[in-house]
Image (cartoon, rainbow, N blue to C red; front, side):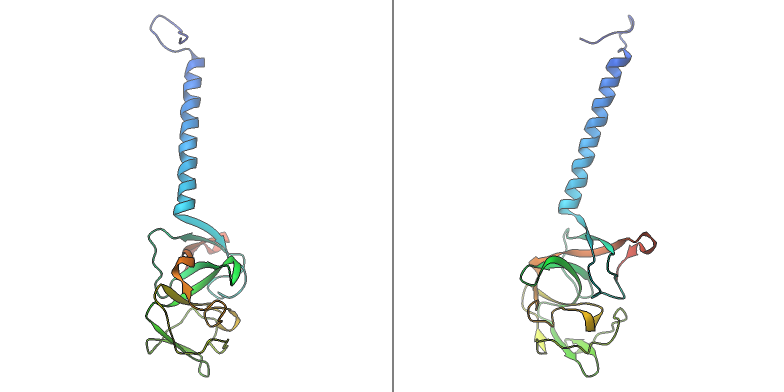
Amino acid sequence: MREQNNASGEEAPKGRFHSELFDWGEALLISLAAVILVFVFGVRIIGVEGNSMLPTLQDGNQLLVSNLFYTPEKGDVVILTKDSFMASPIVKRVIATEGDTVDIDFSNGTVSVNGEVLEESYIAELTTTQYDVTFPQTVPEGCIFVMGDNRNHSTDSRYGELGMVDTRYVIGKVLMRIFPFREIGTVS
């Protein structure tokens, strides 16, 4: 039974308070569920560890990453994981996708995809460090070839233990840097 203030049928202040409290609680739970769904299925926040993506990304940057309806494309900065390589996620740039042929001329520091030298304004220096993978390499179906922007200080697809990366290991594309606050913005 509801308490009544007067003969007009208005609820007493106590009843109105309980109703509003219930409405606020319900709104809070729905909002919390929506945020959880967005972060589980849509976007994540992942931190950068190390200097392999200098000058584009710095150690300690926090990134907003999405995998919603995402297919890796050349030039994308992605977060990936490959337990046989490293337990924690790593950040790299997609250089080539399935069917592309990658060649690196370590003497002049250039990277070519399908016979065209890449214009790479984002790299720290020319690519002169060679690991155990020989070139040219053709990217297998369902895989990508990734490299760090700090080419001579990045362990990437030139290193056999990481090698070509199955696209199922891609956590998502980096949408933007969200920390430090003075550097908030998109990553390209």
